Length: 474
Image 1 (cartoon, rainbow, N blue to C red):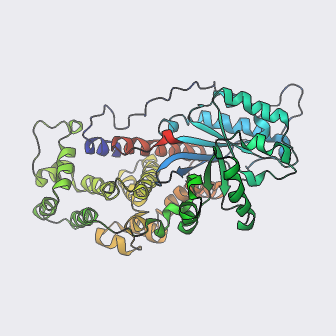
Image 2: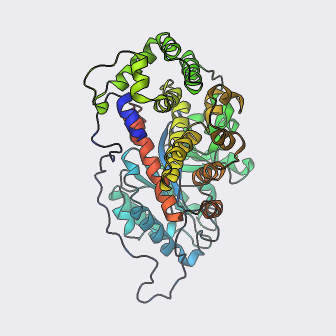
Image 3: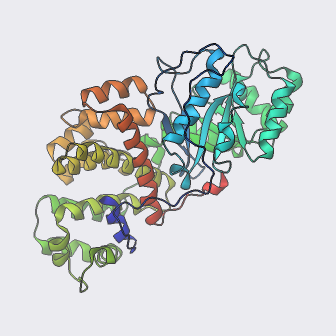
């Protein structure tokens, strides 16, 4: 439904409301049964399901989303002991294929975590070599050997790419004699801000970039804007190419950001719509911003609406669209008014994912009004960060429904668990996801699918809104 809004916004006509993205030219493996032992092996106990496979955004230096980091958190359904690593990785790769993540990789790249002992896994070769980077995790008690280096060479000849976290490879796992052989073969090195102390990280940052200048760095689990500043502004900051973590949702991430005149105008019109103002008052605000008026008329006159004549007034637009649809269209313009701001676009993508996911949760029960209000809940959940104004102040002019306001401001009310589930999905918190789907009487696998669908939908919306991220640089 909302996909149609963006089709009109960009002046494009689509045959359906949710046209799937174009397929990625990759050979996909046949779906296979996994977790079964090979003929001469002892049975290995694996989880019946991996639960929720987290896919969190990875951003470039302009803070635009260019990739996703796929992993399964440790826990009761987390990774097993070292003897089961290959079986677990096979289950993970098969799960990703069964989830059809290739739809996601039409517009993004993927970092997929596997154990260093799984290099012989056939499913590795069936993943899209140009779109997937495998993060090689060290296995305690299993040393890197010359055979491992040879396996990497063979896989790289097939186009596969790799990353690793140097701090995880201590001398017990990687001998000094083989360190150069392993590290020189990876495309990305990972610095985990949730990992070792800065005292341990300092020599890594001082020495490794000089030794391996061809490898780029990904800063993982960057929690705050201050941590991001270290990556972007400290000496040698050019070593970092990619960034992962919740820093983008912190208010300081929009340093110096102010509500621009276009956003102010949009908020004013949204307030008028919520208060059922006279159409002439709404039109007078549009006439103060010629670009905004042009975008609206282009949207309403796009072929998707099938009008027999051109609409030229706001009053006609309100009659055809309705106030609720126009309100949603304006809520998205709050973000797209700053197309050159990477942070704003990342916030838009995250907000769209939340909004679409919550809308799908509501529509599952068949309640149209509830799904509409759930969409607004997700869409406005990051408005305080975008506009650098605290809740509830930033929402006061909009006069949102009480159910939306309670969820966004206080994480309470009937929509509170829905928003909490969206946040848990972002964080890959399996324990909390499982608890919340029970509260909502929802199926875990369906929630997983809905979330992936929402991520893909958000990417299509951004593409059709002519927002392009430089994924080819990954």
